[in-house]
Image 1 (tube, rainbow, N blue to C red):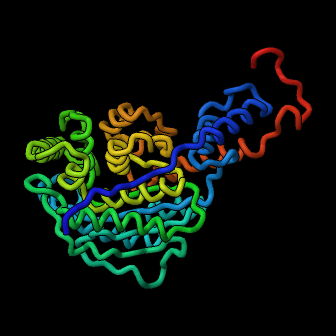
Image 2 (cartoon, rainbow, N blue to C red):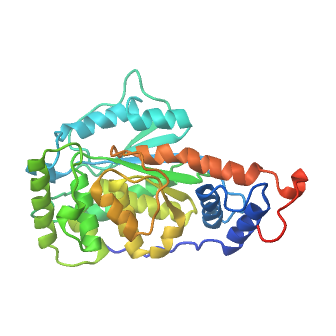
Image 3 (cartoon, helix red, strand yellow):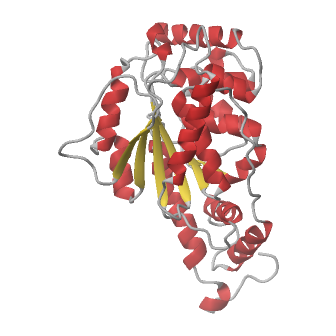
Length: 358
């Protein structure tokens, strides 16, 4: 099966809904602009959802999990078996993302798109808020990105399709999609993708991930440098196939499907941003449908956010991934939408407006 680049089409943000939302913000009982980013978020969501009164709920979290042969080069502080163990932890409600999603009433789906080690999710203690799906990608061909492509055409196509199917299974009508990932070593392909897309050195993009030593960081830089050196093309689809992983490709597919359906994407940290970064190279107009949740402690994330002209909502010195940053920022979307929808206007509250230009 050869890879055929998807011919995706996407809606445009609604200028009419944005204008109505801005006009409403100007009539609410507050000085114009006094709620800062909350106002901006409400207007952005109104434009993308094509609704003058946007909604942040229902919200859903998709976590895609897969392993990476590149871990054999010592790029992670944890063994590959942890990916499988963490998938089980998600499903049984013990992971940070499971706890946050449960507390925030966010439905959560964990999608196995290539976990290498066996695990069981059945048994007592399963979290009823977490759905689990295993896609038939565990036997798909994958490679060590240091010396060969991370995926072949067939694997890339199947991973994109798996991400799109996951979105098709979401609760209707999901308004905000949060993306997360699990894959030991996956900050290495993420760093390689970001470096290739920005044309920067590995040293500027590679971080300490799960807590590797200085020696481990230097090794990780060498791995990324070797991967970049063997690239045959700068075409984004080639970059994804050469450097990415199945969970990163699945997130590209999931985001594309969600944006086709006018869901707002609340973008998590460094690894999720690598998928969004690539999608934006293909379709820069989709930036209108993305809100960046937080600035990761991975040092390269600041460079990526700057390149994408993205000002994240939070900077909590987080670096967990797994959708945790997006979950932490979701209450701000709730507040932005609720204030926009429920505040009284000057006329409704019989409050005199400021004379002249507000």
